[in-house]
Length: 195
Image (cartoon, rainbow, N blue to C red; front, side, top):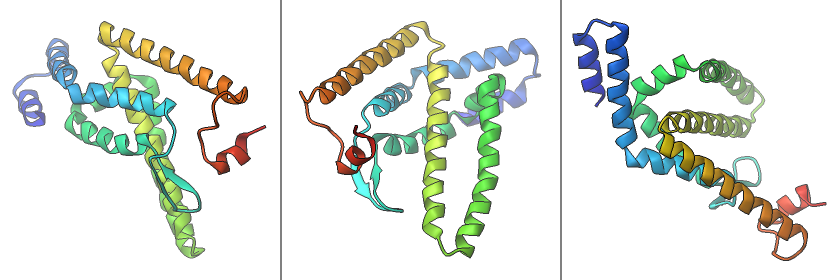
């Protein structure tokens, strides 16, 4: 699909009308991709369902969550629709500023790697790299959600989904504090956050 976009881009003179037609054509392809739609729904669910899938250890007690798995797919879809997504990022100010922030953080990662090697604490670098991966994943999820919300029916669906999940998560928290249902997270969370 990117080849079609690049070939089409080369064959036309870039007038404003032609650019908008090209954008609409590419956006239609984006909307028809069901995988993208379900991926964004999965990311929304992962913000509310925050229980671990697998435990591992980079620097202590780490857990592999649903958004860690879905983040890999976000990068695949970013690559697949990179021209459209980059166009959108550049046109929306907050996404453009966050893109610059991600680039600056990448330079900071190089400094972190340098000092981690000097101080023989390379696991610290891997932990920071994991945080950067999470930030990139959440950033791409926000961009994809914005783009999918251009369609009015999908916008309504996403709003309803977030509303229902917010209500459910609040009900769970209240029931946990009333000791009606057990605390769902492991002991380290209980020790850190329980009152």
